[in-house]
Length: 475
Image 1 (cartoon, rainbow, N blue to C red):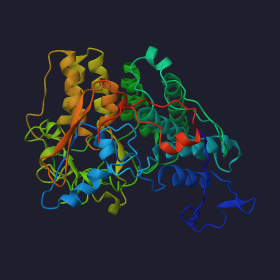
Image 2 (image 1 turned 180 degrees about the vertical axis):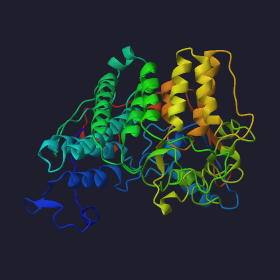
Image 3 (image 1 turned 30 degrees about the vertical axis):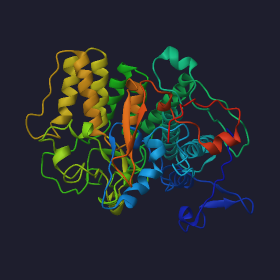
Image 4 (image 1 turned 30 degrees about the horizontal axis):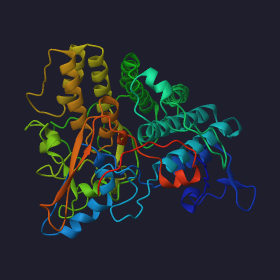
């Protein structure tokens, strides 16, 4: 991988402050204070308006196609655009008409890693108090750990167990703090997870020292504890999962949002939802738009029947408009959320309960697992919310179903399928001109296509890097 990243400070990032940066040359502007670097991290690493991973939910069993026979051409626009991801093609950036739909996640997450590297190296020389520096360090370590987590689960092989993780490839580790042309080879899954675990521990330690007041729009101590729990879950380190999840609840006064009570928010991912710990990201322009995000009549994909059938008839996630539109045909969790200052993605408390539930089930602690599941369901279903299980295996199945229902269309499902059992999935793709003509595409059990290929642009820059061998599929 060759990294060619140009850090551009725009007028928006400058915010009209003449003393924001010190000009050392005609082309280079260097931040001096902690506040300068915090704005730098926010503008380049957290809120740079780049839409990422629109394809995640389209690749899962939560997605079904839909053909509107009254408007077949309009319906097919997004379907054809994301056909290659929906059908798990060998090179999913190549659309059905052979045009390129560039996957920018690889480059963007490495850009964020570079931002974190630069900030952490410059920390001692910045102007600011110790508390301010520790707060910034907490954000930078979080950003780097989170970026490696995303890269590892997009482009690295799934984490199965520690022995496998020590030998199978993941993604390159980049320690650069400047613009370089340097080919990097893939590191092992274990090495990458070791790095992200060390980073999130450092983030937690830094946030604990800092006394800077945080909002949900900046990484914070509860968010770092939650990411630590998530990383431990993917490593199957269940004692740490539970300990970090406990720490989330001890470090925040927030509580689960009660969907069974009276509420005033129009969508679930809203500033009025008090279970949100951290809000981030940019609204998707294509991927979830294809799930009727923008228009019922132009939908290309809808929530699958398998997903819809999981919800009980009195489940507020199904019957209210906080999760879906009337009839359940359109994901509505963050529809219009950016209009009230809310970003469309979030770290939230529901994950704490479901991470603990999964860890307890994996440890054979059925009673404890059910307690966590039902604590969440009590806030989602007005009556008869409790589920039961006689074995840890049954409890684990309940956890899987609950995660699927709770986190649908938030980018969780693909990663969960990868780390659990990589099941067989079948997608039907029909002709817009004649919907009775269709092709069934199959993602086989343990299919190599559960890992994305390195984007074409990166492969062209580094011809020697090992790529995933995904099977060819018929068009």
